[in-house]
Amino acid sequence: MENDAIVKTLTNSGSLHNRRIAIVGGGPGGLASAMLLAHAGADVTLYERHAQLGGRSSAIEGQTEAGAFRFDTGPTFFLYPQILRDIFTRCGLRMEDTITLKKLDENYDLVFENGPSLTVTSDIDVLEREIARIDMQDAGRVREFIADNRTKFRNFIPVLQRPFNSVLDLLRPDMLRAFPKLRPLSSVDRDLSRYFRDPRTRLAFSFQSKYLGMSPYRCPSLFTILSFMEHEYGIYHPVGGTMAVMEAMGQAADRLGVTIRLNAPVREILTRKGHATGVLTDHGPERADAIVINADFGRAMTNLVPDRKRRRWKNKFIERKKYSCSTFMMYLGIEGTVPNKGHHTIFLSETYDRNFAEIEAGQLLSEEASLYIQNACVTDPDQAPAGHSTLYVLMPVGHLRENGLDWNDERRTKARSLVMARLEKAGFKDIEKRIRFEKIITPAEWEARYDVHKGAVFNLAHNLGQMLHRRPHNRFEDIKGVYLAGGGTHPGSGLPVIFEGARITSDLVIKDFSPRRRSARKHKRPLQGASHVTS
Image 1: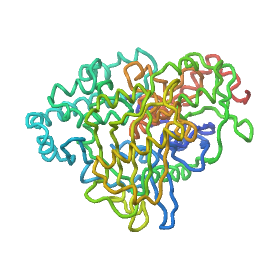
Image 2: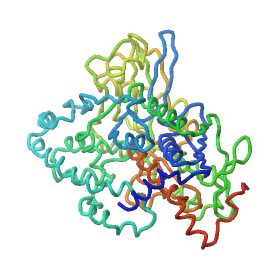
Image 3: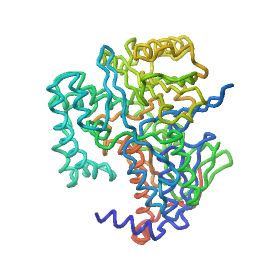
């Protein structure tokens, strides 16, 4: 495509030479943007308020007498690594030189509360046999589902690779080609009912909407491609955990000339006459020609940009938006191993629909909770001391809201007891007496410690009213010179999608500051105060 050729030419020619780019937040989107923009010739400074990179993709370290336990903080599923590989390649680097990804033989154990328990792999023959344990007729439709979603994925990929700046972008040829395959008014569960009659089969191909913090009964049908991607491409584990990927990206950014500042919070985005001019840090104002905000969107806007300086995304507008669920997290270092349990286990409540309805309402803890459990040491034993294991346990809960759950000590204790009981139900026996390290993160701590707006760890919900041009734009529409990366902007949440979004955002910066674009601007009104830092 013409735009791709332009970006490639500009990237190779160092089109951002002498341009100062500030990146706020060292999560996956910020790191990918830093790499791409530094390679394009920019003088990039990345500001991370914490002592380590990664954000929600960082690690939790637990020191005990037995030794150190290490846990992924947030994302543990690594899908479709080709996007990250392409980013490294574009920067003249080989991802494989610093990142080791192991493709899992078994994607996950899928445990229905009252049976059956399935071992899900990317081998379609095996997948058919497993689904047959639920329903023989459904098993016969698996290949049709995969084939149809292969076509859907192929048609929608171009849409996920470009920005959506206005409603007119819906009329572009790639969108018009993809639209008939999307069934936009259907939910994931309803779309799956065209193939599968048993609700448990549909759940086996729809629980992945949890990766977006949404219920399959509300999530748009587009996202059946999440299940397809698992079966088509497999699931990978980064050796050393997701944090190892963040560390490798940080090393790559440093090698490309990025200045990385840890323990360096940005206090405000500085503007003049609607244009970004720099960032305010604890050391004072620092000039920037452009700013990429990788921090949580709702949190960043309401804290870093005064309300009066935003036209559309006012605080009241942000407050009215729909948000994903949150999570109650337990990170357990245990003595011994967990027999007969794979790397990933999905435990699905018998009343999954009611469970998610209670999560969305956010008024109580669902007693029949579903869980996700990572047992990483079956693949990566160095995550725990010898003779020990790590268990990462996620229970979806409602995000923070007025008149919602109060995450006080009593609620925290009740949630812990609920998780331990549900672990036992999921087949993880005799865990509690073997715990040697334990850490808990509640929705309140997601907000306070990790700067997650409302504790909604999957960001803005991915409903039809908050996708494509209705999501915050990669080139932020309220302030010139501000760009967005991360799950709060287009295309959305999830590591591969965030990497793709960072690529979109970086390409916009490259094009906006290209010699061709700057030459055209000489005949228009120049940016006012672009070289001055003011508050």
